[in-house]
Amino acid sequence: MVPDIGRGSRTHGLLVYLYGPGRREEHTDAHLVGSWDGFAPDPGRDPDPKVTLARLTAALDLRVKQAGDRAPAKHVWHCSVRTAPGDRRLNDEEWNAVAQRLVHATGIAPAGDPDGCRWIAVRHAEDHIHIVATLVRGDLRNPRLNYDFNKAQAECRRIEKEMGLRRLNAGDGTAAKNPSSAEKFKAERTGRPETSRETLREAVRRAVAGADSEEEFFTRLREAGVRVKLRHAPSGDALGYNVALPGDRNRDGDPVWYPGSKLAPDLSLPKIRLRLTDGVADSGAPSVTADPPNWSPPARQRRNATVIAERSAMLLERDEGGEAAAQLVGVGELLDALAQTSPATIRAELAAAARTFERATRSHVRAERADTRALRSAARGIVQAGGALGRGEDGGTTAMLVSTLVLVALAAARWHSARGHAQQAHASRQAAAHLRTAYRHAAATPMRVLHDQGRALPEAQRRTHEDTLRAVLPEKVVRAGGMKARTDALVATLAQAERAGHDSEALLRQAIDVRELDSADDVSDVLVWRLRRIAQLPAHPGDAPRRPQAGTRRATTPSNRTSARNTTAAAPLGTVQDPNRRSSRR
Image 1: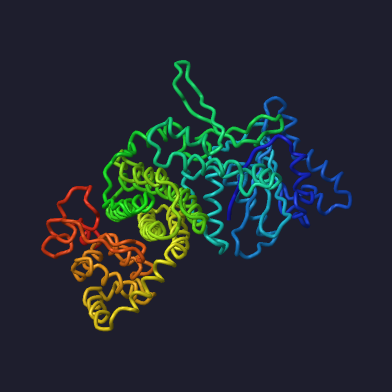
Image 2: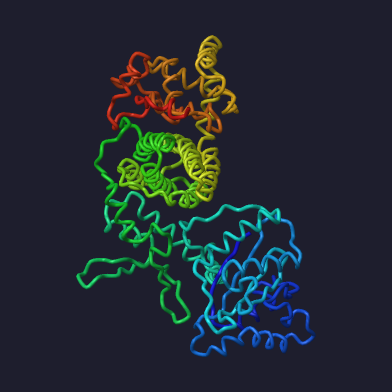
């Protein structure tokens, strides 16, 4: 059950709308289901609705007129309450009970208070009602409506439980502001797929992804076609910024400006400055993966980002608070960078994942001033490398990165769930679902080639690698991930790694030890990408495999895995094993 509260100054105008046909003829059988005294006139049940509407307006406004100048300018309190999709249909008596509980909980008309505000509840659809109240009490004082929205939300959670309705996740005050009804209707009227507020929020997020400075952030915004207006102090320093879409104007013909803080709590200029200061992207930082000349810039940057994303997943699994919260912000930037540079076939799903995950980046756990330079540098590298073609090594590395981001999103969901962040956990799982869809499209071609290569191996060689899989893969991992696909692609990857000079069994053990596999949708696919990344095999199997560099082969032998734990943070993830990884999950 979802409440939506607003304020206004025209009682009659609102009632005309509620009892009218609606903007799209969606209002049917408008009638009262409740009122302050149970005897309010009902225009929907009267043969002369215009006269009755005037009587109802006068009755609601009586205390407002009596209060005179003491009445608030916006004296109309309007709350729409909607059941969730799939909920049963409530009857008029039940809606009346809902309305009475909400006006009591918010302080509009407390139960047993004869001086409560006057209110009515109008129903013109099966799934929602509108509560209209005038904000002057019978004793001509104004009601105390502090935190009325939070109180309405809390009461709706109790109503859901008692009435057997779908129980929605409680809010925590960290969500971005939803578009108003007026903004939604304007978007429909002008033919826009979404409101200006939503378009601008995404544009600002993408502009800040991997930005190196405040100047670069504003330059990116302007290059994206967004109008930018800075607010300056007398000293000349920028205090904040406003953004507007070209052509979006109000009734006076002026641009409709939105402050950054009204787009989302973390998009104010001070918050963006803090992010730029905490994790300054270093475009000249050395790559954490090899840099072969035959890989395109997008492919190199995606491989680099995959390693960094794996580390973020590990931090989310073992962190207790602020450092993980900072990682989530960085992962959000990485998703924004990937969404704006990926091929058209998966761009929509990646953009949806980025928009959804944005909710998971904000909670009441304060992000520590942690080092997020690696994530921000990865995002910057992806943006600067430009768009991937979606085929060859570009397409393979995109699939590799998206596969890893699925596990990062699931790790974020578990982190939020452990702290009771219901909305953020739900957003993380939704992002994972979008990422899985994008992955299936991105991985279709390279996985098909790998399956063909695996089936074409000599029978003896194939049996050898299948025996290795049976010996090394834990039974619980096979059951958890399901091994949905056949192991042809995994066998082909082990064979290619062996031809490139690796010990296939040691390499497989190393890939398993990177981090847990229980959350993998398909263990086989996850291991394929880990093996190809660690062994420096091309992500697109049609390209020629590379011989391991000095040190890479040593890292795949059991005798060197222990010493690899003490390598620096710049070493490839495949050569690093967290000594606390197993104990932290017990």
